[in-house]
Image 1 (cartoon, rainbow, N blue to C red):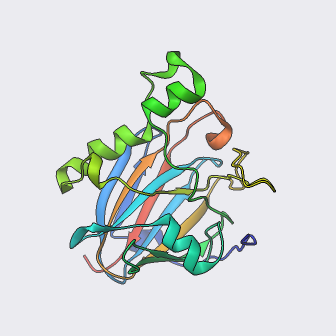
Image 2 (spheres, rainbow, N blue to C red; image 1 turned 120 degrees about the horizontal axis):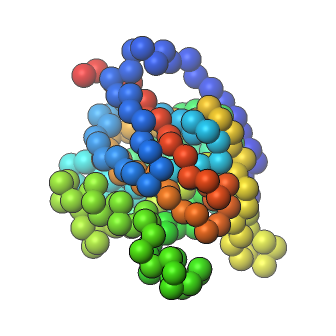
Length: 215
């Protein structure tokens, strides 16, 4: 199990090539050029930002939670974690983290999983899978291209028996996580609208995206 590691770097917001606020339940898709720094800010605290990473030049080469966990020998993600594709290629490295710990085993919510977990009354609630499909479509991402995701700021403790539990997040207002693109990377985000478990503190809130690279 990975210990909480908090690190920060000094980059000026005014110098960012990307500066965007994503409301709860909305999404984002964009390419981070190799060497670029990309930051996700938890504006209000305790929000889950579900995120997918792809090799921008080969969308079939996408993030793999199983390969990442195996190679780093730890379940949770934090500063220094190298996020690998299922081919073993390095996509991004977490270069700074003031949130402390991030989940990559809990998966993303969908309308179907909401019904199974929380009841039929949740069928028409927004869910991350649908946001991924909506924002991924212009880049050629459909259901077949969806894979493992990272739940930035989400706290999913493992029990001694290996079961997953949802708990209040370790993040807070203004906390952030930052990744460095090790190649041209497509990042696809669903700012989770989940209301039925504590991953968002029962109150989904906006996130802010900042990116530093040569325009």
